[in-house]
Length: 411
Image 1 (cartoon, helix red, strand yellow):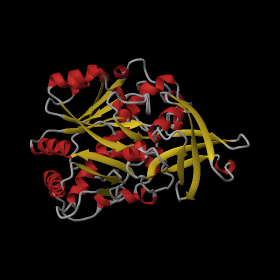
Image 2 (tube, rainbow, N blue to C red):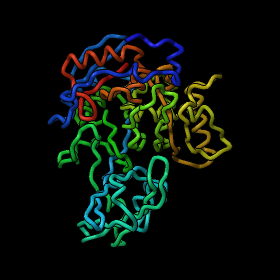
Image 3 (cartoon, rainbow, N blue to C red):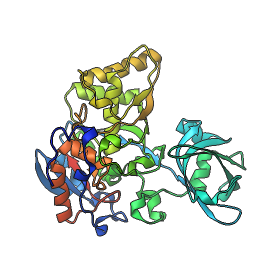
């Protein structure tokens, strides 16, 4: 296949066909390894490729590195109802609508609304559906009422018996863990632990930030002994992360939106690291999108307005001068100080594709991604055409692919 020209590498002109590769079914890791940190680790540094085991990742990182983790926790987003006639209907909770703030929604003990996908929607003729479940506080019944059809989802209102229960508790007891569709199986007991990172904290994701699944307390201890700092941000991973690029060129692909929250303490530490010239290495594509979204928000931030992060898909590709990373982060800090906020929150649709200029990131830890995906485009934005060498090496070397697969360290 020919190498894309510079004009083709303008993101809107990129042909997704150029980012395809053969992925045999047997190379998809259907289940995790017995030990998280026993996964293989492909290391890419200055064009050279080598491999090691993930538990030794501290040996591969600079001692002054700062690792940026996404602490989002996967929720039991799949709810399986039945119509009065006994037909199955699955409601997949994508993101909260009312209240729109995740923690307020999860803690609510009254009706809430969510944007949802509905499987077998044709079976749901009218009225509310009911799902009975056992909880430590007794039996409860969750009711779902379909309100509006939107372009990419439905708005669904949930109410329930048992007013002492929060919506988050109902999801935890009555919902199912949403494994990626390419695993082609339902979640089992093992997934309840292994499809969460060991540092997962903030509930809201419908898919795990999978690069973090390899980390263990043993790896954290090795990082600490080397003096490598760990920082935590939150990006709630949406189902759109698996959305295939169906258009021939990226210009016709609508990037999915995801929710971000970063504390002022973490921002201050990020700013200090960038000022000191320390490499900031995101753990996963979600942490990368969060980090780079901070830059693009800060580039246009004004201390006169309340801090509310919103980054559009094509923001990075506009012409014109841009501030330094230090200047962009300082603008956010000034904005938070002026408005008395301790967090910057909001949404990003940032598309990172070949032609993108990285503003803060000094590396990337990630897994091996699906062909023709925006996640693969992000890797290619970092490695250039070497992404194909990396994937060829992994395919020839018996690496495991996708969410439960092996990892890469790109420096």
